[in-house]
Image 1 (cartoon, one colour):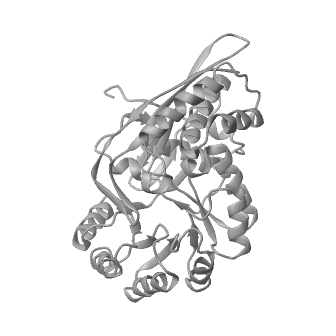
Image 2 (cartoon, one colour):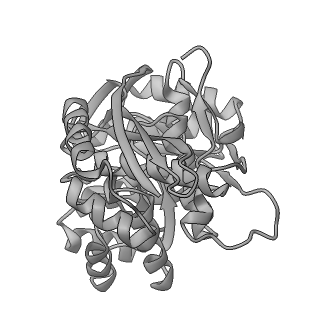
Length: 366
């Protein structure tokens, strides 16, 4: 196939309410919709694919204007290039992009177009095996941002009524507020599974304090994601040793070398795979398979993304065959979603819809 061109436009969707984590706040998505066009060199047929590049500036270090500029520059490098397989695609994208977020959006769009050309789902292009069990289902958690504790309790109660039982609780700005938030959660949703996520904001001792609070409230601790700073592997290892639940490396694992370092230092027992962090689904899949070989659990997560980005992550999950923790909820946090297809959702359950490419299209009203 030959890459005809890449285009991008802003993808800014307001959130229902501010998304606040320990390191920052966003009020709308800060992304870019990437449109890739490829040409089947045998038939001259043009195939169009969609991908989402989603910035979360406090985490990704790039913002929407950076993405738009990066994709425009990359078009000058990629247009007219022929691609025979993953190795060609990887080399071309490595030359064209300096940041993983814009690269991830471009790779997803190209895989979507490639899947349409081959009449295959994106997960098949990523190396998935035949799924004898039929449809691919996962159960996602739902994220509770940092906010006034009583309000977080109200949010949790509403999500519980909608069928969610696992709550990703953002912590790390104020330990006392975190404790009050957990108390509200225990009062309103006493059977909840709590997945703490500090985005690297805590010292190991404070992380262990929060774990003790969760236990004392008789809540189930599903995991603790990135309790300590990305480079504080000693602190991460301390929490991993004592947590009694999976400790998930997120910011600590951006590359496959990071994964091997974290595993060697016993600084986590799980890894969070994100397309925007790893530069796209191909590399995320490589890291995920390496983690599985190391005996680590797999979480598949996202930045603040629409249905388009989440569907691409579901194809990643399907290509790995089995994932242990799913955090693909952010389309629910938007006031509207300009895309349709990709997956069906019933409460917390997501079912991947089989189709060509990623399987997501722009909604008629978008």
